[in-house]
Image 1 (tube, rainbow, N blue to C red):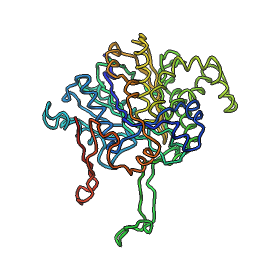
Image 2 (tube, helix red, strand yellow):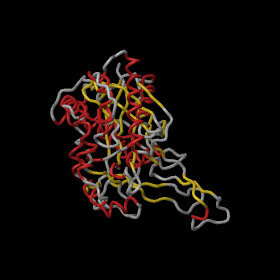
Image 3 (tube, helix red, strand yellow):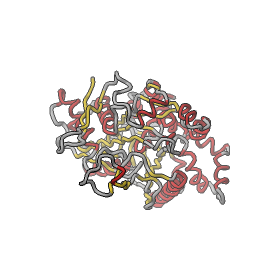
Image 4 (spheres, rainbow, N blue to C red):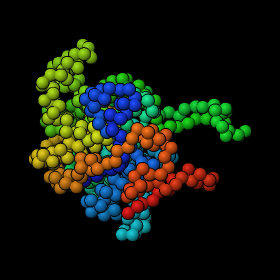
Length: 442
């Protein structure tokens, strides 16, 4: 009996900003972003969207597209670093939305006996959720679980991370019927506590608050979506952790060069070309290239041998990322969807082929694991139409982008949207202050 992913779905917001527009207004050479990093479009949440609506959209689509009875779901585990609350799981909002949408057909509280939780470890949180749910299914093979990765990668305006922004969600149905991908038990792991990227509570003084009263504490701590980060240091941490996790994977499996047997290498992609850049170190070590300087490592990436390797094993997974941007926890799974969609569109026979995963989360941790493409992969992928859907999105101008970023737009840009949307946030009642309420448009 195998265990893994039975089906998958996704949701990407309907709005985007062309990366050339951002480059123009930030005085950046467009080719630096397009050809240097592989960035073409940036997915943007509309005024009614957030992490919970993304997750709900992906979960509902998963259940409906593959006719999954909701009562079969025992777990909904959400990986995110864009949580809406420090106590109440964002997954509970998504669960409740899906329950309401399916209430007429399936009755009230269809997930009453479902275990629901958020898991957070920067961009690797959803992989942690996947590993956890796989262990659960192996012990309970008649059960099914949903792992959903949902995030909004938001950076401060004019920061060095601004052009990598993106948003969306991917939902995976985990079961003992891995039609899409059977996942092996072995996970190589590497962890080190560092400050390469984090979202701390930030102290501000009482006098900086206009409405501060006599009962207001002298120091307040604020939480913001925009991270504190060191881009170059984070890149190095990413590279160090995946190398260590890869070595740990090799030690556990006894396989000397596992990457050679993998059809595709799937990475967490903070930007589209990141995977092919950081893997050059492992590739060099595995093929007896030794680097004394970063420039020597760059020289390897320019060789015909390495370029051919990238085109064959990594490039198909980059294509969706170029059109979306960073999806934090969802980016590694979107890379998988991208590679499988390309294979489907090109009518390739990849059943039974191996796929290797290189997951990373700042703070920092990496996991390396592998899977095998299932017998029903074409049936599952046939419902995605990934690149067609990405081409149907609405372009916004730069001024609209900045206003959305600053939360200055209250009404939806896409006024004809269908699906889940934030209706209101309670601003008055002391016992429900900040509670978020959603609606579903058919």
